Image (cartoon, rainbow, N blue to C red):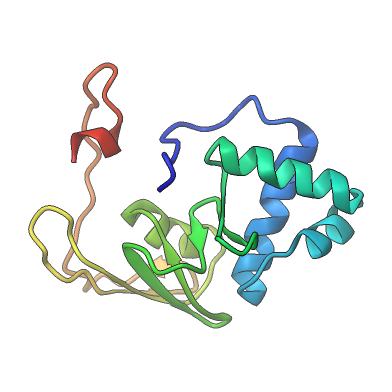
Length: 156
């Protein structure tokens, strides 16, 4: 299991950011992100792209499955996870509630979000249309202060 970062990765190089962004876009649009496709999109050689993907995987900035395929980037995943998104491009998953609403909102997408509260087990269905969550959604999100030195995943 990956130790997903909870803070931004500001020290990524420009090629690393480009590969990570391209992986996200391919996962969102097509449901798969290959090294070859990312290399073509970014203009990087396949060997360079493969090396960058391997480094990003080690740093938790992307996920790679057992077959070497990129399976997640920027919170978007093709592997079942905590929150399921039914998007116009197909079913995808995200790792946290903020991404479940935030990704469709930021991209002005339609999405039907299905998730379960990690604390109480309550089902969390949310409809997002043109990036706007339904006012009828039975959920609210609040952000609390973090204890110094404790990452959110460590406190669960």
